[in-house]
Amino acid sequence: MPDRSLAVFPAYRDNPYLNLMLLAPRARGWNVLESLRLEQLEQHLGRLGTGDVVHVHWTSPIVQRENDDMVQARARLDRFRAAVDGARGRGAGLVWTVHNVLPHDARHLDLEVELAGWLADIADVVHVMNRATPDAVGDFYRLDPAKVVHIPHPSYQGVYPSTMTRADARASLGIDEGDRAVLAFGQMRPYKGLDVLVDAVRRIAPTERPVLLLAGRTSARDREAIDFMLGDDVRAVREHDHVADVDVQRWFRAADVAVFPYRRVLNSGALHLAASFGLPSVLPDEPHLRVEFGDEEWVRWFDTAEPASSLAAVLGASAPSPGGAERFSRRLAPFVRSERYAELLDTLRR
Image (cartoon, rainbow, N blue to C red; front, side, top):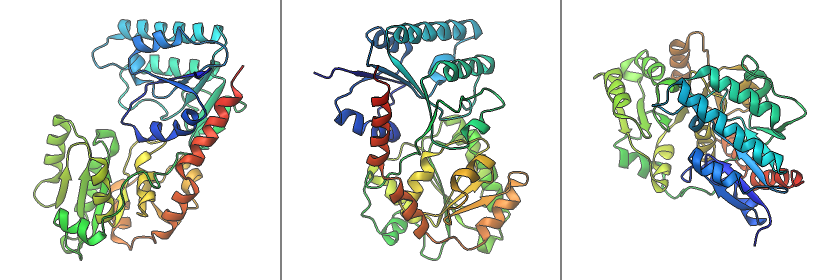
């Protein structure tokens, strides 16, 4: 029987990042307690003690539930803090991974800032995937440099099937070999800047205009907005649902470049997915992204001060070589990152 438990919250079982990072801890005998709801987390934390670890990832389920008013959100924050304090009082360690500066579309911003600041203060370790995270979050809360541990986001090398050729992928999506194809992959949300991407494509001369590939789960409301954005002059091949693992390759093999026109981004799993398929990418020219990816030859940048015109110019130029993306992805092999995470957990055993 495992003699140590790792309580992970929230544990989205279909999240490939979590599944990859937990490979080595599971192999080393950690008993992983997965919870999605605060009530379940409270039960798990009530069982933790010396040698166990709590790992908090995304904080949205605590104070950002859609139908909670401020009073309800405050009550949930207090419950969360009490449960974590109880586990720590019995000797459990605490890790917090900073996935975002703040949750996207946060409703109770003051409570979210309070929660982030509290986690930063009491965590034994603050895990960051971007080395510039302390600067990126500095307007809202402070990270103690002595607590910060940098473990980069793993690549997805070997995780998804990769047997489809470019020609077959394009044929399956109705794209001719001579077409230029620009991919936006992942959940379609307003903060991901699809309006900027569509505007940029529209600024390119019709005879040179690329085909947009849009793939990822989309709400009915956001799909209506995307329909309106595209009009009848921008060609797009779309899949507004979860993309099955076996079909991920189809979209990345068919594309010439992946674009991430985000308004606010600290880390992006989809960027690492693009690299795993050797696909060049375009990112917003933000200081913290430059720190992490500025030396990568497979990455191009657009100016966030004039995003649409800058992105149009980037898309109109020749794509960078994909070779650098493949090398970058191999450097971040998933199990190596997971082993580093497991080593970190081992240091917290009290």
